[in-house]
Image (cartoon, rainbow, N blue to C red; front, top):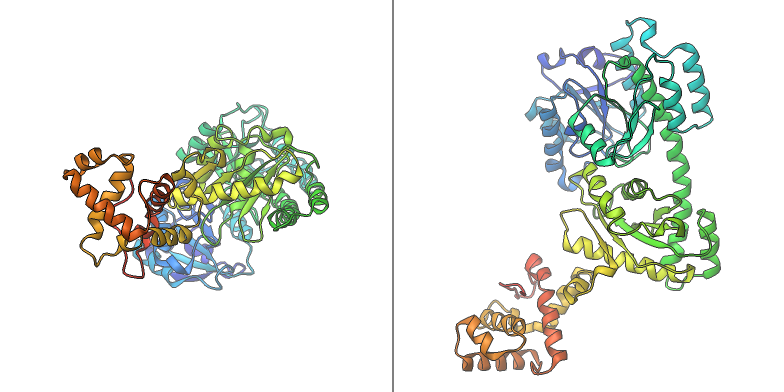
Length: 523
């Protein structure tokens, strides 16, 4: 099937937005459905790429479009089919990027299911193959009955490949390498190895298209041996797996709404113990602890963080957790006693980077609290997890990071969880005139203060470090004390000033609207 044949299918109603004649005559050899901002690792040469454009935002529209389309160019995609439902139309920035990189682009009307496009391509591509190249009728009947009763992927995979002569090895994997299901003939693969196989395109991989599934949870049907099963069979199985995963997603949506009600109770100023106990039971959690609580975000304002956190927990072998969203949009999870011990940096910490890599351009931040002995401790554990999350976002705003509240054991680490505007305001209040860039003496005074505190208040070591006479240090410290109203012979005042210096990064990043700035950071 050529690009122009797909676009000319009147039953789909695809709208051509940009293309050159020669590009329209290119053959399509597969379909990938993705909402990753950088999809290159999962796109094969010659494939049509279907995207709902969930990754695109008006704020950084041109840059996001450039990254996405350049990834398609690098992967040698045949055409981009862009869904119109999310934004009402295909953004102009995306069309312009496709024109720059010579990627044909067409709009997919909101009423057209992506699965219809996928099936059109594969039915055309393999429709002329002999009948034995698809699922036998009796196998298809069994699979249809399994899907109708919402059977899981293990049953579907086992049934789909059992009729093959040598029992083909097949696996259903997530992008992070977690094995969702596998045939009896498939070796058990550690998650890091499975993730590498998907990324390196070993064997044959067919993406599973399912509605309401985040990029972190998406399934991939993988066979180590490309000749073990005909392509049409694989895509039929993938379609059935998509229906199975969509059914699971609907069940998760209900469970996550129940978890959201639990989160609202825990985040309230005064938690209702009776209400919390009922909400725990509604989530399938025991009424008695201990528990562990996690909090996570994918990006400021939005992001499929529920899927990311759920995949982290599943990858760590944690079952029975309640995952939901707090009233402020933060995603959280409550993990019950049976698996609470694995919620550590050595447990989920090992899985976190692999899951974050599913969306390389979107930092995945997380925080964990110390154990909650019972339901009365849950609000405290949630507050700790949220504070640790704030610390992770402050420490690594552009990179994925998981922080455990129990590791915040220094003043510098503790301050990372304080909101940035509060840190900036504290710095201005405490350091005051020392931040005034209009004063020629402000910079040397600030440097002297930083060095004096770093040298534990030693006059001689400060003078040596700054290459000054000790009397000059005395003079400068005296001026600092007069300007700030602090006594540097007092430990409490020294701590106040040191904390203000540690908080200066927020002013360094944003500047001071009142004419203040700073030129060095606390050491």
